[in-house]
Amino acid sequence: MRLNRFLAAAGIGSRRHCDELIAAGRVTINGRICTDFSVQPTEGDHVKVGGRMVRTQRHLHLMLHKPAGFVSTRSDPNARDTIFDLLPPHLPRLFNVGRLDAQSEGLLVLTNDGDMAQRLMHPRYKIEKEYEVTLDRAWDAESAPKLLRGVMLDGERARLERVYAVKPTLLRVILRQGINRQIRRMFYEVRYDVKRLVRTRIGSLRLGDLPRGHWRPLTKAELRSLEPANSG
Image (cartoon, rainbow, N blue to C red; front, side, top):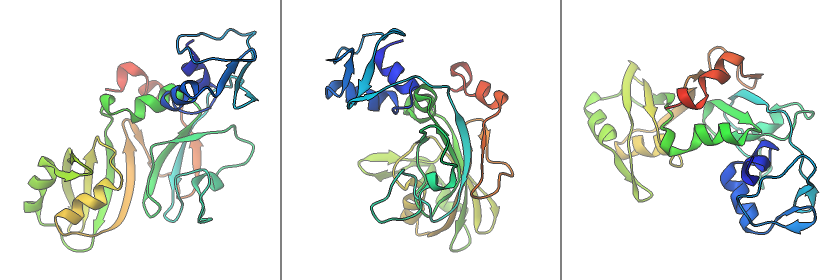
């Protein structure tokens, strides 16, 4: 197992983050700084990050129903509540796969499995995310083509895969991108304010009837559905 995968499996972070730590000289093996990405630590090696011993741990994968008012980070300089305040303290160190802004709700995945996080987050896998969007006024379907063609945000074209009305002010939308506050900003471009935003699905994972503020482990069937052959 290459060094970045070893670190990701130990819950240090995504493989990209682990690559950054290696490149920065923060990783040592048996007391020596290692910047060789191809190294494969063995069971007897002492691997440290920032002077702290790294030990592989069993993988844990959780689904969380994030309420509004919680930020998707481990600590917040403004002392707001974070999603990790909703978890018991005895769990191993987890990181969230993607984010929801503070006022958005719904499905978040938390894990210490860097490979799974990579599969769910990396644009090349084109994982669908589904949302319920409540607007400030009745939806006019004539605005849909512009959102499906895409609008420019942060120098790239942001587009929805699908959008359809459930009620006059309630829509379901599907996207495969992850631009910051993408849905809110896209609807603002067609003169709508998003009053409520709830993520209900990531790939094959569905929020279902999990109550707000609650969490549960992913089932074996859900984990199988996220394996590489099924994640395209």
